[in-house]
Image (cartoon, rainbow, N blue to C red; front, side, top):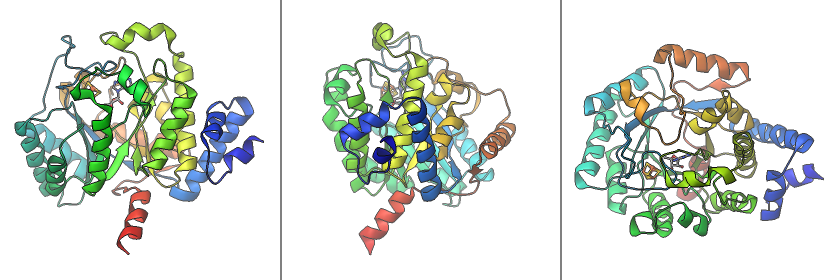
Length: 362
Ligand code: 5AD
Ligand code: SF4
């Protein structure tokens, strides 16, 4: 019986494939069960993070990404320090509790020094009372350490796909895009004491349910603290666009992404899972549906000004026509409507991280 698989203590790859294949009644059961697990283990809170897209300048050339280095059609931008500080101040005053700073991957000393400087400034602005997540790719252990000491608490590096062969198909074959380096970064981040996040894209060309089940097992095996994942969305200015005709239809990629969130919640009960922008791009209520399926983190984009138009990893990325205050209010209303509570003023550390830390230090 499907319910017996759901209730298992530890799921095998075959179990996970079965859950990913759920249809109709079984699919409903999966979502209901995930919601139950979530309410039991993380309550009805949804944590807020203010998302700052610092810059779309990137040294890498991932085959799927709209802001890859070789895409000359992108208008490149880099926020000024003042813009970053004013966004951070805004998040602090609005009691967001945490910030996520995301940008393309660069490794120059000029860049890494700047991030350290920004982190110190944000720490000052927020009286050291706000958590900061960085998402800026693979860096050396020394840089991770430097950034952590400067004030970063969390770090997200997506594995994109845990299947090495698939990873290599969607990235150029060179030192800059090495699967082993990506894995090593996840290890280095943990060693540096970060709350560590990863994630995958769902519905990539050549990806199978077996791959997605392996992705879930990968996250469980490395005992990850936070996850951000969503559907792969084709971008016409990228090499992977040539496979657009062999992709699952967008609605199926969306459904599969919701199932991934639900199953991840069931197998990793107390981690933080984000309702990602990619979910919203594919469905107007995508993020709310992700919350219902088990996600407990919501990240309003607080990138100032026109920069927001240019962080186009994929096409049709939603913007917002509301003022930030009105937007937050509407988010709060929508989250209440589905029975959840926007945890304004809370930093929202991963319970999984906090518990692991207790285990470690006691
Ligand atoms: N579709 C969906 N997600 C994408 N990302 C990059 N390009 C795409 C795309 N075309 C995601 C990757 C990356 C993060 C910054 O955005 O997972 O790690
Ligand atoms: Fe750069 Fe990240 Fe896009 Fe790859 S996915 S090209 S590292 S911004």
